[in-house]
Length: 183
Image (cartoon, one colour):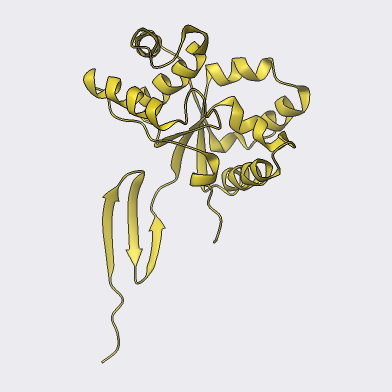
């Protein structure tokens, strides 16, 4: 008798996984919300490991393995970025970008993060990123902002407020954690 390859489907975390034999395959493209730190990371030459991780992340986007969610907040931040960063962002494949815009609801949620002292008022845009990623139900928010976004106690507090208000939790990770390298 020959070995029969079996397959199973599981719905976990970032989407449905299809397991065939010993291979795990994501059945759908992840929708990953990005902030400006992820775009500018390609040019962060003071941190060569970050540059490499950023290149892997953006290659996954170019290869169609990741669909990024880009907000009006990101667009606004890109206007103030150096030209080479704006050009890089502008050259991304449009087919891999989902545009979203802030709403009164996302602005109110961001303000709530501030009033609950997750971060200070000067970090309102960071809160707007978290709120909008939550409301558009991105699979994950990706950032290199370790002070206001990708910090465990901040993630717990953002998600605690989300749960308290009846919203879903948002996964918050670095590009390194979601890049689709082959290793």
